[in-house]
Image 1: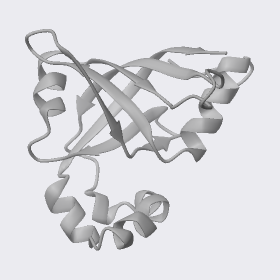
Image 2: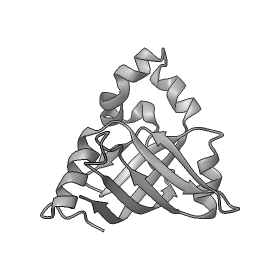
Image 3: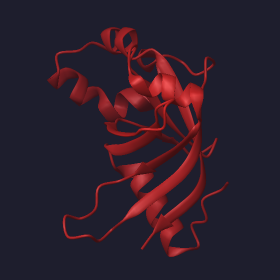
Image 4: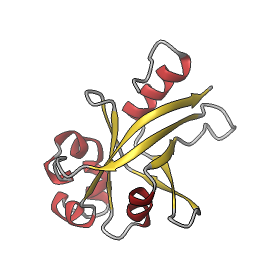
Length: 141
C-alpha cells in the first residue's frame, strides 16, 4: 500500500512517520494475546515501509513469526486528538544493514544511544533483528 499524501489521514501519517521518534507496535502472541510495546523506528520513503530493530529475546520476534499482521500507532495529543494508526504486515529482513551500519537510523537515534551510554555496535548486538512493516491500512482523524 502506498500511503496517500492527498488525504488528511495519509498526509498526517507520513508527517508522523518522518518526524516522530516513538511509536507503538501491537503484535499477537502465538496463543492469541495482544501485546503492545513502544519502539524506535525509521520510515523508509523509498520502500514505503517502516523499519525497526528488535531485541534478541523480544517476544514480538515469535509473535511476528507466528502472525505477521501488526498494528502500529502513535501516541495521541493527550486529549484524544491527532490519532494516527496503521495496520500492516511485518517481516524479518536479513538484507537490511545492522543499526550500526544504517546512517539515517543513527542520525535519528544517535543522541539517545549516547544518553543510554550505548555504542552503535552494542545496539546492533542487542537489537540484531531488522523487521520491516508494510502498511496495509491507515486510520486517523
